[in-house]
Image (cartoon, rainbow, N blue to C red):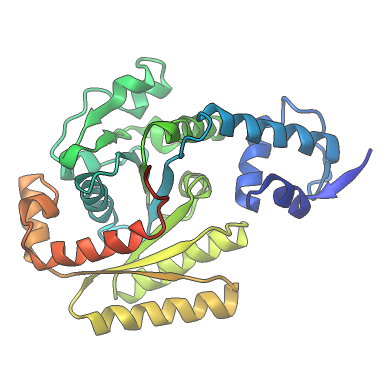
Length: 316
């Protein structure tokens, strides 16, 4: 039986190693040869079957239909303002006319709905437990976007197994024909509960601050992703800075380490300054870009979103 390396298989499929790993996990029991003990070699026949599945998924979106970009927002360290960035980026994209869906995949500790001022009746916990259809957990959010809550204080979600994560990733990817952008607000950390969702994204935004521990953890998540085969674009947002110069220093440190030790590019997306408007918006349970549209932080958010738009497919 002819075999090829996993690197060649990923190239044939037009995906990166992380995407291939997800496919192998998903179909190892349905396609003969994928459960082989030879972890670095795959049967050509099995790879061809995977390729057909990928083509069929593309056709499912409809001929000529542009699929949404999936954007993961992650940080490594908690408490750096990742969820605030996710909610406000999604809101601003929606206000600009992009059909945007924000999915809170910080499973078990989801709080994007709080910052958005929403109280979802049903969450991913209900869907995964068979108590709700996927469409039932989608709610209207600020700016006209749609939101899906991950559920908060739910131990079962925090410990979601591989099968459950695969099911959720597939459901997220199934949203692509029906919107323009899907934003994934991931959890903190570097475990599979984060990396499985990042692997499914077309772009990843890494949020950090100038705090040394936050910078170290931002590099940590980038390192885990790249060493795990992630080859898609990585973009940096530096939050809560006092000046553009401070943000630039953080970017140069991370970019230098990423290029030197990981041989991967880290793109500059922008900064979000320290601003009392952010805290005020949290108390109002409203995105700061809506509560304080003239604030300094909203001004910089608009720059971040404009930079992000350059990476999004042109809308028809």
